[in-house]
Image (cartoon, rainbow, N blue to C red):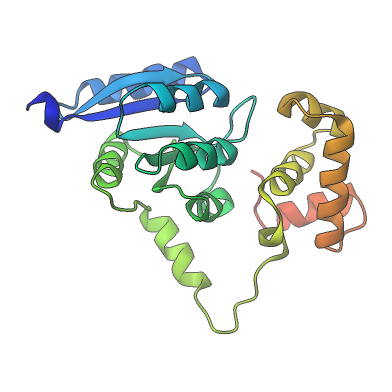
Length: 215
């Protein structure tokens, strides 16, 4: 295997154990090499800008900026970069949103190592990667009379706020975690309640649980 044919991969995940696990899996693969790693969204953007690579493995839940935000910025600066989103969330929660934002693929972190390697090879070759479970979900959504769920009308930040509130976090908790003002998070909350025709957090949480938006 020549250096020219090796797929250079960047890893962006805020958990050191996950990063090391991914590096170990890829170390056993002759045609893939880890070119660098980042532990937050800002580092991921800088890394994608400064380090030669083909694929970015990007966690959708980053501490400073959402994975979707990072994805959009990386795609804007490096259109040829293949971004494979990684997440602990169920595929029907974030995958379609990520793909619409420009991701080349979406993979659950519980997937087998062989599936990760296959996904990296596919997106590096310019193809999209989706799992069988996501393919089935997409097929289920294709219908002439299919109505778009209310949560799919939300912006990325509004959707993120919804899932965090439904997980039991307060507006102050969310503001601190996303490094935004309480006023800004309150605005997102007001907007999403209005768009979804909900009155308060209790209804929001009930909706999220009913639609499997939170684990």
